[in-house]
Image (cartoon, rainbow, N blue to C red; front, side, top):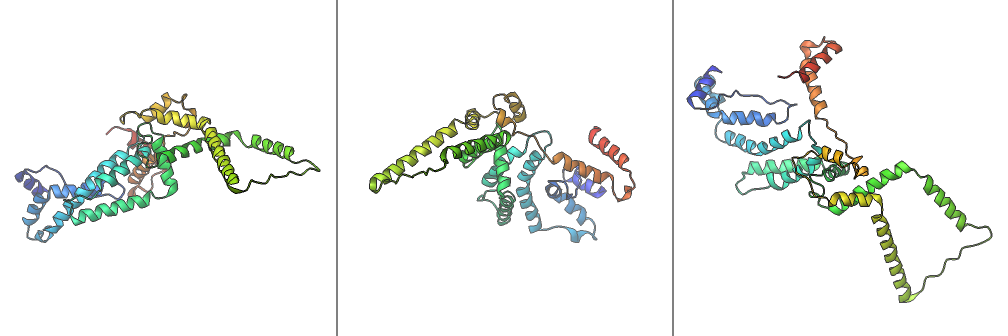
Length: 315
């Protein structure tokens, strides 16, 4: 380390120490590689100063390989840090971020090496496999649409996502009201149609072209009536009013917006729930770092106190 510091001073390099990656720390692999690439000249000079360590010097293609890895991982590290936040909404940002990554950041460029292209292709494939599940995609799309910063701007099938949101609201309302009214209507309808000693005769459909045209016009009329009924539902009107509003600035708080507009969109506001697993995951990591194999005799009360102090005391 002393020799490394001297070589850094001689080469006018930053006085940075080399670090090692950690499995549970996101982006640590990039940090490890980038620090080594930054200090490569000083590390090489330090190893060459000792005959016993000269064989450890990386040469030629190894350095270019590490530089290519840094080129691929650097933008991913930026997005990882942003999506790992605890105090802001992140799930609604997944769809815009993934779209930007696959269409821009990880897109093939003319000056990319074969390694960079293969790494970008592998990362894109991995991301697609992670989020190809239909339930996962529905949650991501719903969260994105309910974010007043994005709404339908990043939806490839905006009309389909809008109808899905309307159906979700309608289903929620139906579950709350129950099926009592539906059952009573069905029983009354059966009572009107069923009468002892009488039979219902079904009129025969007209034949020929007139019959076909009559069937087509009746079907068209039924579809139009069904569409008009959908447009008159509270769910359709609320979703239409929400999507018609302009999006807010990306630096605004979407939860605060929903708090201010809850009375105007009461049904949609019930779907907006701030959730995150980042804080709990970091809390478990902190507990594991405190109660190691060398401190396995810590009692639960003592461990809780130490974790509380670790998470709340300023550094």
